[in-house]
Length: 483
Image (tube, rainbow, N blue to C red):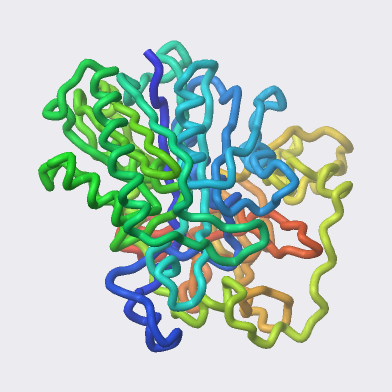
């Protein structure tokens, strides 16, 4: 039995209220909110966070392959998946490759993983572009999602088994973006509708035949598409009851491109009961349908951060701030020299620290060194260290400051000294917070981010973000001890 072994998603902390767009852009906007990646997030960092959530509770073998899908890659002539591979500290024998360029790529990666092989991690991340006031700007969203695919013999129970699949492909022009363009263009909507609806209906019929099921046997239908009108028309033509169609999160998160099919599948499986049949229909440059049946194991599954919880936990971002983060509103930069481009050789020498935040622990004294060191701070032993991964270790703020002078794409910088549980101290930048939310005793967790980009090179490292309760409030050492 091959199917989904683990799942996870990551939604950025910030939400843009669409009703605030028109007052600034002179038009556009709408109702509801959309997720907004922070100034230090991109498709790669979103994918890393989703993959971390997926692998956090996995007890089986490490993935033997990692497929990364995005429509907004950081690099065009370099494999982006290798940075995700490094941040997750996967074995060197694990293949990593990009499935990039179109919204259909994530479903293609998922189908390739389901076709066979060892445990395969399918990850998607997107930061969707859109000009100010455009429909794409309002309708889009940012986010990451990941699925670990494998067999029942891969050391973990299958949460949902694949029971049927079908695809329909046809060449036609619907949406496109030339390399280097900041916007996606779209042909007249009615034309796309006339192409997608027949393809979707044919794919659904073929997938049901492949599974030996009737339409009435399907408990939940997920429809993902960058063409919202075609998606609605297909749902109507299928004659589906309203309670069968899954929420596409368009009014709260928006459409995160290649991430959308995986994100909606993660959300559906988090709420699924054993035995439920879930159909994923993706309309993007054709039609793909995957049919899954939830197993008994899904009842015991607990996501690290469920999608519904992340949707509810978002915090507002002002529209001008969003424009500045996207580089669409030029503002006065910090009056400090811009950083030099990162060194490839230095990054290679310190890859475990830079991408995996692996500290060193003195075998004699147990003291933790951040960054890793060869000489122990206690006793002076040399090269008597063992690796101490810190990505999943929480910490407590012991001091903090607001730096308005240092270079930052979004000043000011909130900087803190953090004591990590079990040892280790590090001065580190904080993110996903307002300055007045941080105080001595604030509990924080690590998150993979982009510090800056120079000469086209993204400088990735780790930051800390406040831990939050279900209501979004910041957790402190005192509240954690009391609760």
